[in-house]
Length: 476
Image (tube, rainbow, N blue to C red; front, side, top):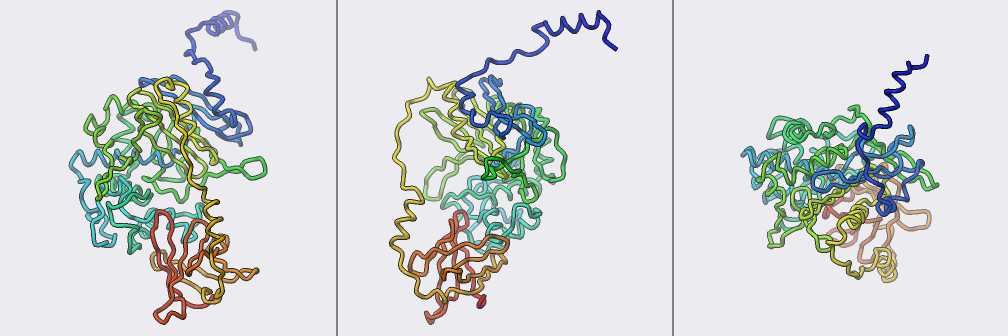
């Protein structure tokens, strides 16, 4: 049955009225070109938000948030923001410190007595600035052969961190990005406040700011509305789902948010609604090494400059999700990018967008010399490596007490050496001379026993982990 004439007339008038819908900003062709590669219905892509003086002055979605259901990217979707979560974790710890419930300079073993005594204190401040020396939890998981799809509860993560009898370096002496540190900070909030990081952040940060669609996702089975799925390229011109949530460690990551909610968080940097001026001063405090050097890293954000303008920024990357928040505080201008394709690098995209809006305030780019690429350096190293004449001495099984895992070194079909890590594809060992080998990004060094005839231990060195020792157990 058709509607009565008067109803149709009212509807027509409403459609003609310019006041019935908010005015949309004109399309910015220069900005849209930055994302043109992904701006199509068969590709994942990004959601973009440009914030000036507390308002979203430009927002667009490029590509699809969900390829199963043809849902487009855009400001209505919720995205996982990876390590951009760290600024919220650090802010929660900062609030507790300002309330006197913890001290940033106290030994974390006050709250984590299960951690070993390293001979020198690891302080809360060390966790915040990535100067603790604690080995990265995701790196440790990889060396154990744990897979991203495996269920990895917080208790197991805590046990693995506590199992480490050594540090990558003396606390405070160096900087090394550590997800272990921020996972522990998330746990610290719970041990200090009696509430989970999710519960504490909801009441202390998200609720007061009206961030109703932001939360720390500490329950993988929790249902979310309008969640963007994440993808990787399949190598055949298409895409595969990348999303895996079983292993994620809240605090180091774990946050979902929307464009409007992140705008509200950005605005708090100027309004000081949550935490007042004291929190803003604290979370902009940069780390200082024991040698006196000041780090760019503050409380979950890197403080620096881009083309002559001050910046406060951080990125996130996990499970095919990418995010980047670039803030130019003197201009009260920010760019927020949230992407759902693992091959996208959102940081340069965010700065390219900023160029379109505030480029007149930026200085000219200067050409920078680039160091030799890893491939080029490796090619030189391989040409100078010595021949391996005693391959049989390296064969065997090697056990690490720090990881509670056994590796095997065997011969390959071609007569070389192959490293077997549980549940991972075998990796060939490339000789580099002097009992040293390379396997991907790992450096391995075999150490002979006191007699000098038999291999006794295997020492590996990996970024963010330092040196880990494996003791030879026997032949494979």
